[in-house]
Image 1 (cartoon, one colour):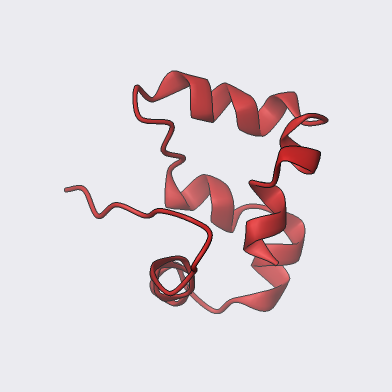
Image 2 (image 1 turned 120 degrees about the vertical axis):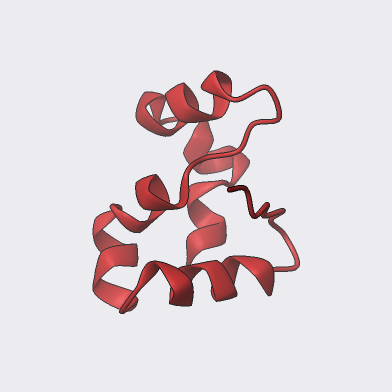
Length: 66
């Protein structure tokens, strides 16, 4: 499900997500932004669960920054 939000099809229609992608030099989006999407929020229990899902995605690249 999370891969859909970053698909070419969806990104072509969403200025909100593109704002965050364009804000970062490498195109990363903060996890709290992804976690705020209605369908994601309904499907996960925590940001750590979402981070695990993102790390295991074959289509998305995640980064752990402190």
